[in-house]
Image: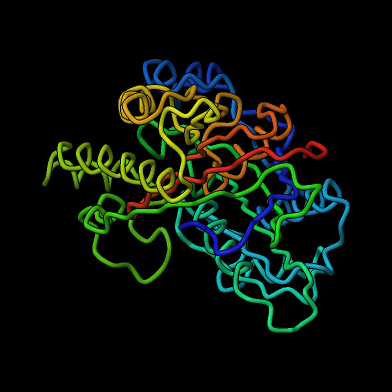
Length: 354
């Protein structure tokens, strides 16, 4: 998707708690196997002990607004994406976040696309903002995307609930506007998403449908559902679809933006925040075939942030001033379902986000 109008990214923020769960301590206590710790290559993961996921999203949203020097009253829409439990059984965290930051004229939306939620929300928000302004006032349209996840006991084991991925707690926020303004740090040139719904059973396994969460097991156990899938179908199918999908989102986003895969302005291809073994096997070789850009991993100190990887990577790109004006980056995301997304952003100057 190439936005119908110019979409500016005015700011991006990532909020992380101070407490850390350390892999060495997990190995010593025998909650994590040493070989799994070596394959993940995360020394520590952020832990939110006394703050709920939507409360973290509020903090990231406030930081993004402050960084952009604007108020929440200007927001036309707010999308909140998440992967895991948000603190209440039947409730809209998006409305809570909008209320807490005083975005009272914004329409709140919840985006539930598991790990790919943040990237999907940015793409949907860009389409929403690019619709014609029928007010006749010619004003800018503003939208915010937030994510937040908290992977704590008793329902989730951040180091061992999944294969090849360890989960960190944190939140993100990105502030977008249309048309892009002179103070924006980045511009969204294009976004692309592809899906493979035939892989949905990888996170369903052989389990029957249940009447309530965690009916089958005390903890979320993606390893169990993946084992059931692999026992029935093997891993070749997923490997083929994953490779094809990474190629597809990369080729599509570059084509839509009119950018070549070896354009010298294309500086970075930023990875999802998965464990290093998984990245080395399933992502880095494929991306090396697609583009000449430097492949970058910002997730060593955070682990996988649930729905927030893509937004966290935007925040890190901006905070570190990695792109000079006119330079571009590909920001990748993927999640259960399966769905793959890629955002192509270009630096245009302005103050760095927090």
